[in-house]
Length: 393
Image (cartoon, rainbow, N blue to C red):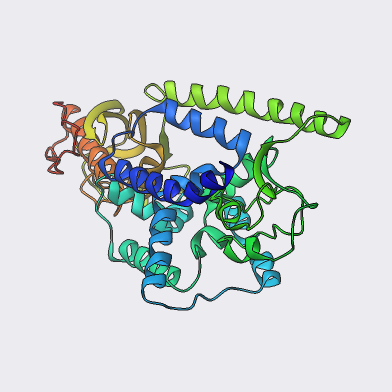
């Protein structure tokens, strides 16, 4: 019975990967907060299942590996020591992304093939660079297993850290292991499985390739770790301490996003001298704070625009349901540029077209409502996303 289950693990995984890829393309689960919460629960309890079974870009890298097999190309496998030396790179990139400026994050996202692929699936237009990094990484994947996942994916690093205390993991029986090394050779993430009784590496993506490949039954199995020692009981308590606040934060974050302040940029923050700013769209407008609206990816977006001495001094996105990842990308590129040039008619941010156009439309709407003499309404001509309807403003 067990051998039959192991035999069908990889076909089942492939089927789920294809289904998840189709769901990602059609956007059927986009905007469902409970999916993200469920994903966090699964990750904390059993590790990075998302990376191995659901991630669209991980799936495409696996497809490149299947193409390699069809073409009978011999894969290049990095020496284990080199792979271990390079694996902390994605955690370093994750740490850097938490501290660098908004503009730098935006630039970094332009070079992230996973982010660009998700943007394309969401209906956003990509730049040549965006498509280029996707194609380049998939080309490399023909020769090296999951290169992006192994060394560069910050989201995978996040999931790996979240699942570091997982109570459910792959367990190796030293008594029945024949030390053939097959588990290590088939692991796409260069995890050293045969040297440990539990697979607790942050790199593990739970693809179960090692379990399927193991020639001896009951040697590699997915099991719940027994909590029968003080050390293990302490780890179990740590899991609860981690998971409860994370779930509470995710629930709050998702269910209050409609009313939360999303982005704010001011002349002071940008260290600009107002006397050096050009005369622009705020000409003829009395000092004050004015509100305008535009149509984003998920409906209406509202912004507040502050005017002083006929200059735009600050812009704040006060209400939106657009995905924060793309919204942050748009606001980092759009709002400072509008203040710097004193016009709402600036270039949109590639990869975040919907949110970019909403910001432009909303700022222009606010200035028109305020009585600006040198501003015309900006028409949002971005076609509505599949399954979403444009809202009238």
